[in-house]
Length: 228
Image (spheres, one colour):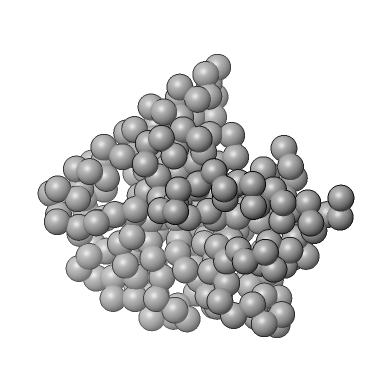
């Protein structure tokens, strides 16, 4: 089968498994721009990128190709020294990976530089793994939420994001634990702060668990672009 048609077939098959309430972010970390065009031509609009420089390059190619309604999601680790670059990305829909208070403060200081209003997910470390970023304590999560709600004129507090445990012998059980914890944190914030929040959780290997736990966004790349 033609490579482009193959991508489109996998994309269609995956979307057929998703409730209408769930948005699929097609992760393009290892994919050339031509693969993105294939998915776009099949009607897909939400794409996620892990690296700021790659996102800038692909977003420019998208604009040059007339893909003006594409929605970019930044999903990788964001360093404060990359904020100015990220602000230049056209059609930046959301940032899924705001993982500490210092980063959030730096983003808010520079929010006027962003080309478009951008939705913010706070990244929560539900696995407890030291190599991962993310908020760990409820007091800090609440402080970040208040900061966004009070000072985020260009940003909106949109939801919470997490990644399941990497080092484990039982991937799906750990995914269930992590995703359930994120859902509970979301429910607590909604009840305490009278807000409505989305959940971003689930990747190629564990999105089925995320669906059961009520996610609103899944982030899938390999299953679409590599067929694994």
